[in-house]
Amino acid sequence: MLGDLGGAFSVPTVRIGLRLGLFDALHKDGPATSDDLAKRAGGLTERYVREWAFAQAANGFVDYDATSRKFSLSSEQAMVFAEKDSPVYLAAAFDVVAAMIEGEQKVEHSFRTGAGVRWGDSAGCLFCATGAFFRPGYVNNIVQSWLPALDEVETKLKSGAKVADVGCGVGFSTLLMAQAFPNSRFWGFDYHEGSIQAARKATQEAGLSDRVTFDVHSGKTYPANDYDLVCFFDCLHDMGDPVGALKHVRKTMALDGACMLVEPFAHDPLEDNLNPVGRMYFAASTMICTPASLDQEVGLGLGAQAGEARLREVAQQGGLTRFRRAAETPFNLILEARI
Image (tube, rainbow, N blue to C red):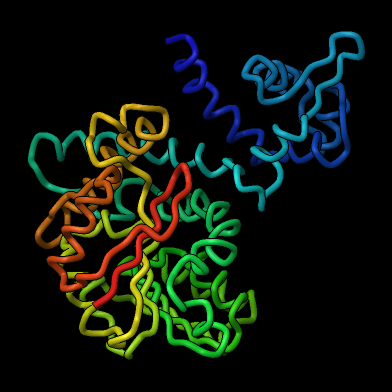
């Protein structure tokens, strides 16, 4: 319990350190005393920086040398707190935790009423924190391993394909694919207007407006276009009617098209998910995923630990009868479904 509570207590101090650039200052310019670190970070108050640095050293998030009285980041610590394209960059995870705490009263109310909590309403910027949390995994996997694991999809993308990214959020996944496959055309859809606004802004900044379009649509209302690929990145379980969403895929996708479902890793027996990964996902599902689903039409409430067998069932009910596990990571199942 001391370990768990210490980790919980670390959330606000880590977020402060990230926003004030303290981790970045240690990573960029090397070991520093608390006085040097305060100066590097723009003239912060040394006394606060000193206490913050010892808190992170106690966490194991920074190193401390008692002889030189200097704090430093190891290469492993930097991958978690400073290197934004690292596969284990976890800065946004602390923002997701803060958002869950902010939304606590709304979820507690739903426990009593059975109602849901609309995506984007539970906390101020849950949607941007969630997008940033998933980004490192997407940066290091979508183009490199997940898309190549699908049958003949990469070849189509290289020559020119039509791709729908359903539940695209702030658009990280859509833009990564568009950057990698300039001959293809991409449409991102999400029912949350704030996410689509952020995605449109990111598209303009990336200079990808010629091949990327974002529109506000649910998983059952986006327009048909004979898509060669329809993607659901970490979102199908959040939908109120995932069966209905996959029925819509069947109507909007080309007959030889593929549907890629990226979902949180889970074993089929729920008891086999009582482990560190499942622990994180069950907590997030209680506070974010299940309330979002229960707020929508049907309100199936798949949850973030549905597992491959349950997802296969949903796909088959949606009319996608060919189904296989294409790839996996310790945190994701990558599933391919076809008509």
